[in-house]
Image 1: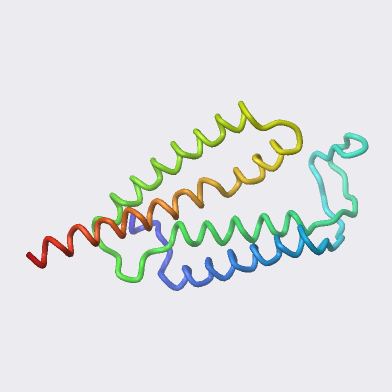
Image 2 (image 1 turned 90 degrees about the horizontal axis):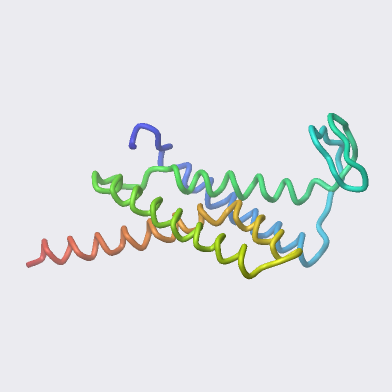
Length: 154
């Protein structure tokens, strides 16, 4: 796994992008942050359904999603400052738990959330596996360090 991970300095870039994405999300939701640009769409279905067209649209929401996805990607796939051998095991356990919890979240959402609320669930799902993975990775890492540091002290 160490061969495919990015160097540690990318963790700071990931944190910065995630923070910028969070700030832009707040601006978008509460202050109507927007900017319009011409985009190319393979498929567009607003008022009418069109394929392979260009048009002017508010690109703020797409920008926010791309920034957050890039930030979470860098946080997930960057080495730790002091990379340990057992981190591969921790990463695998964190991924497994994240996928299980995310599927439970989606299953329950399909049963109990409808209409525009479900659209929000779909948007959240873009990031939920990353968020669950990061939460589980750092919890498991903390527990392993606590467990093994106590055994070394005895």
